[in-house]
Amino acid sequence: MHSQSQPSHDEVIARTRDWLERAVIGLNLCPFAKGVHAKGQIRYVVSSAANDESLLDDLQLELLALCAIPADEVDTTLLIHPWALTDFADFLRFLDLVDVVLQTHRLHGVLQVASFHPDYVFADCAAEDITNHTNRSPFPTLHLLREASLDRAVTAFPEAAMIYERNLQTLRQLGADGWQALAAGVSRAAKE
Image 1 (tube, rainbow, N blue to C red):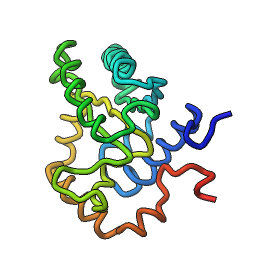
Image 2 (image 1 turned 45 degrees about the horizontal axis):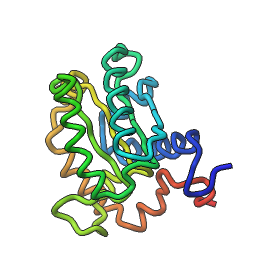
Image 3 (image 1 turned 60 degrees about the vertical axis):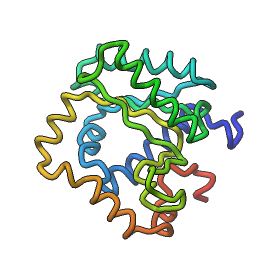
Image 4 (image 1 turned 120 degrees about the vertical axis):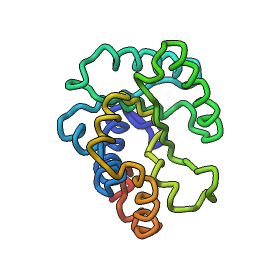
């Protein structure tokens, strides 16, 4: 039996999928997410890693796995790691290692990694600023993306450069109470 602080892999995926559907897609924070979600092309992987080294191993495996799978089967991967890098400062430091892994495997220009964390704070924001929620997820998550898919999506969405600013405006309009009411990625027990 898992405690509240140790959710099962199924719960981790369910909460992440709920966050994706309610926040990322529901608020249109990423206009590219809806299509791959609807087509079932998102791979959800829960890492059991409890430290940086184990997570690096999982990251390398998932990067190589994504390269080996045709994009029409799996276009993107969410590597969710609820037990590693729960401290945001540690998570940020780890992102430098992510870049090293991409370079080591010669994946720059092929894949990129976006980052999400429950305590995400942009460098120019206060921790309580609502706009931080554009990158806040239920669990620390590395989003593995194909560069070619991003290029196609950006070409199809002529105002891609405006997404960031639009997201900030969306979150400001929603406000803290609206975000809380959205309950994106919150455990079922907490919703009841």
